[in-house]
Length: 196
Image (tube, rainbow, N blue to C red):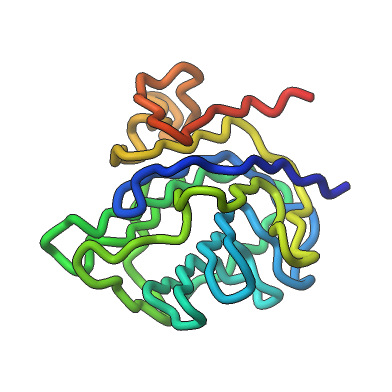
């Protein structure tokens, strides 16, 4: 069953943030399924979502123009497996290719069908004052995520890599969760364990 969690943001960092979440998909090839979004209106939003092609999209739309967009080359079609996703927005970074970064199970994704890097200090819609931050859905559209989510972290104003939230097991080599990462959440940051 799909469920969404919302809150209205205060002014935060629009150039620097990190999102981390453990997810397990339950419904494939079915519409847009939002993991995390910041929305002002239909022309201004930041969205992390699976599309009906089972690719993972990260987009920032400002005044109806895409100002940052990553679309993975590989598809995510394993409904039986948990995966850890980390998304970084860091437009203060001097290297254009490092301003948007995506990690899956501790490894940085480097192959994208679309790789449109934001400009220097490009603002994300996420963290603008009075917009809606949502987990598991989009506040303006029926784009609910179908599946399970756990240990969702949003960090406003600081960049963290995947090893803050997970580590490779020394015996099995499997990427596993760190249940108590040391992070500074900032103005709009939060932690949702998602036990209920």
